[in-house]
Length: 154
Length: 169
Image: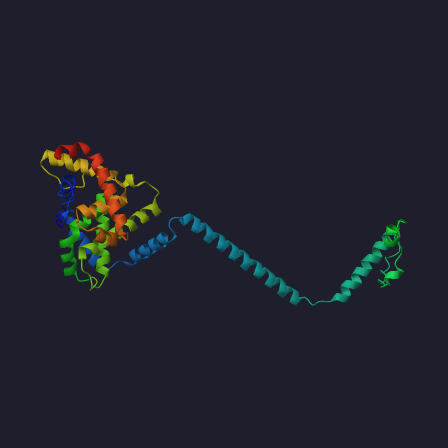
């Protein structure tokens, strides 16, 4: 059935005997079936299936790992998209309501006055502005052990 | 490729391709699938390459790739050992001579013990008569690797078939 193996003087008798053993031939009905399948055009679903198999071959040998990575990416993208939509909606609502800082400030002062009246206290005075003073005007250190360095070394 | 050309190629080479696929897969159903896959791929081609010197080597290479693709596809479907797909039955042609039948049975069993890479080289050398350079080209190996795989394979076969080997020596 096969091409006869060329005579090899180095081959021992066992190799020669093995080479002389004929292999099984393909079944007789296989030829007609193979040729008919080879000539017939592939149906669309077969093409899709073979394409799917190529994809599975591509991600071989870890299809589950690749699937998990893809799912994680989809989840991250969905989360990002959702956050972006939420921020956009919030921005739209903020644009719709007119900003009015003055009434808010008035409301806050009214609330403070109301709280002070409840607690029978004076309303909190506004904090005096910080005054920048020169360094020499700063109070001396509270501990009285400070001596100049020159007096220590002398 | 025209149907007539496909049929000519089938008549000339199908038996050798089937034997090689049977050697590698050790399963008749898988060898059938491989043969079908090879001829499907051939049918999609316009023709064999114009500068092709040895159509048999080209087709054996296609068969080898089809076997490898089939193994990968099987592996991606189910993680089973190669031995699960192994079907009982001899890989060689049946014979009425009991001595020959016993030898073929022992040889088939010994071949099953070889790793697939050694089995491929042994098959191509013994039953296809290819040189180590041709085998190296076909399997994309260096000639030295092909020769060493053949030597390891033959040594293992000789060990496994030692009783018979002593008889026929």
